[in-house]
Amino acid sequence: MADPSPKPVPLLKDQLDIVIPTIRNLDFLEMWRPFFEQYHLIIVQDGDPNKTIRVPEGFDHELYNRNDINRILGPKANCISFKDSACRCFGYMVSKKKYIYTIDDDCFVAKDPSGKDINALEQHIKNLLSPSTPYFFNTLYDPYREGADFVRGYPFSLREGAPTAVSHGLWLNIPDYDAPTQLVKPRERNTRYVDAVLTIPKGTLFPMCGMNLAFDRELIGPAMYFGLMGDGQPIGRYDDMWAGWCVKVICDHLGLGVKTGLPYIWHSKASNPFVNLKKEYKGIFWQEEIIPFFQSATLPKDCTSVQNCYIELSKQVKEKLGAVDPYFNKLADAMVTWIEAWDELNNSSEESSSKQEPNGAAK
Ligand SMILES: O=c1ccn([C@@H]2O[C@H](COP(=O)(O)OP(=O)(O)O[C@H]3O[C@@H](CO)[C@H](O)[C@H]3O)[C@@H](O)[C@H]2O)c(=O)[nH]1
Ligand SMILES: [Mn+2]
Image (cartoon, rainbow, N blue to C red; front, side):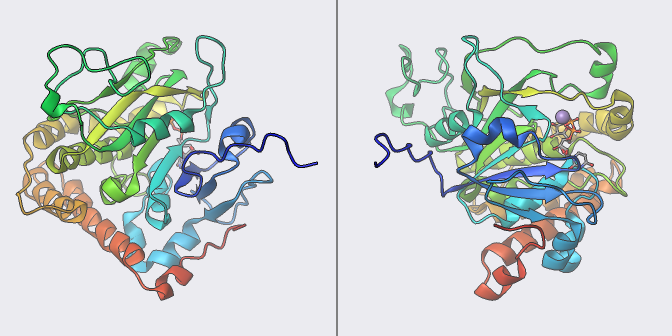
């Protein structure tokens, strides 16, 4: 007998890839199975490429390890971090879909105050498919949400909003604190569920965490370069921050929106604060110069694509941050290599896409 009530097709089923960086295992996917099983996964295996990462049965996926990254990008692979979660951005580059959701392998399904499992992916999709309000703050939060609207005094000329490029989700349990805060408050847990989605106003930067993040790859993908970290680099755990600062400057310039708030995931693992302090140390004082740089960064009117905005930004990084530390010259060059690799893979002929086949288990 035909199934009386066929399962609804998940939103954006064939237009969204889920990108997961991992050095661990992927058992966490069992908890996400009801929400993720219908989507295609791109697993970026970091660390030793000879280690076998088992992907739970039933997940349509492609898996890339460091050998694949080197084979596909050749010398340009040097812009993809090694031994750092920043490697995940390779997944953004090889995807062919309009939307990306990226999640860490120690993030689990959280429950809302009613005790219901949160389908984080569904909420991110809602965030991305509805406009943002970067030009005028709506005090009743997301005006496009069921049961809310624009409040009195909100200009009608601005109610159409702006296309949403990024949806930044949050975390219950282990908050994404920097090492000093983690050291001072080792037992602090985030138990506060705030039922809101906010647009980050134009001209305001924010600390983008890559743990629970979705974006429109066609609108902003080329700017989602997770900066050069990990092996051989003087800094770590600033990959997502770097991407967020570049992305926000470019979104402001191109009239795109960035949202933060719902959905929550349950972040289960506190990474070692002493290891984190070593990774973050230089970033903690460099960012006092980096932030003013991004706050004052302006892009010329003739920068109309993400790629040429990003190249322009890389030039300014070299000019204005190169004096802070030679690392920023290397990072500026890596930003250019990233765009070259992105364009090679994404504006490429059939030939290079065959080159793109992963060695890992592709289903
Ligand atoms: O060398 C590595 C280390 C880790 N990974 C994978 O990346 C994510 C995050 O790793 P982890 O949970 O250990 O790190 P956190 O401190 O909790 O993560 C926060 O810092 C950011 C890293 O810059 C991250 O976005 C934040 O969530 C896991 O999937 C690891 O398996 C890796 O690939 N390589
Ligand atoms: Mn974690």
